[in-house]
Length: 315
Image 1 (cartoon, rainbow, N blue to C red):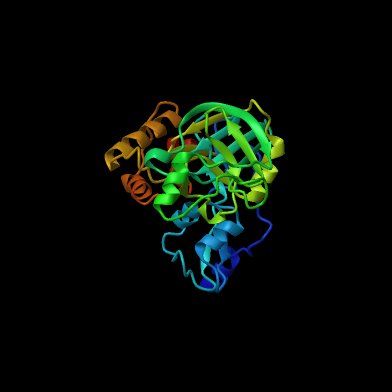
Image 2 (image 1 turned 60 degrees about the horizontal axis):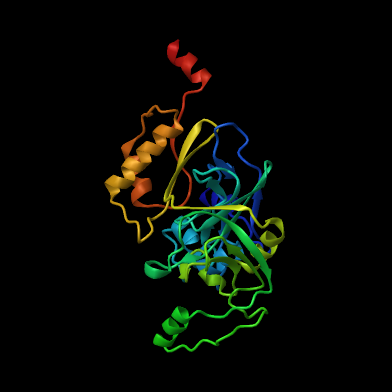
């Protein structure tokens, strides 16, 4: 029985996986896109796989797949090991227009029209002097086949590590900016492709946002100059799927640390806002588990009474 259940959960991996183009939430007040959050998708690891290989194959972020599989060895999952593939996402608490970037999640949400949401995993800037900035900006320019002239600060950093950069990188597949780049209204910051795909879903850049080559190739022609870009820091998201309230948690960014108590208070505020200003009764053990062990997966925390439930209770 156990073997049959495991087999039914396993989904064969596909090398053609790319960005998720999804319908928006179907019910007013809902905030979850993708598969119903109570449905779990798994793939079976192959003998030679690492979790990072599986993340690249499914265009997920590296930290994203590690968070979703805390009991699976990152480097040696083992042949046949079921690996959870995130397919449900709570939308960030931001206007659903243009491009929205949630930094702790390391994911872009793009709203091209009222009937679609497109989401991509990204890599973001390292902590300290290289963090990706928050705030509202716009797509200021689009560059196909960009060249790159490393700034002195990056040249100096590489030299300190014993690595000498070229003074100029011409357009082409070996360019660190990839084949496509968006220039933001924030001077010096880009959204661009990269051949270093293992860094997607990690804090590895000098502040720019990196995308899988196939993702930015798909993304590039769909986004116009002038499109709004809203970069937010939301390590905790709360949202409805039908009559169930879900919580999706990520670790805090290193530059904006928070204690458990601070994360709990933030969560309770979000729950109250999502429930029309009323605080529902929620088991403390569920919140504690979700906040202390963030998985990046939507976790059910409350089910509001339906009309049938209310009638049964009243009778």
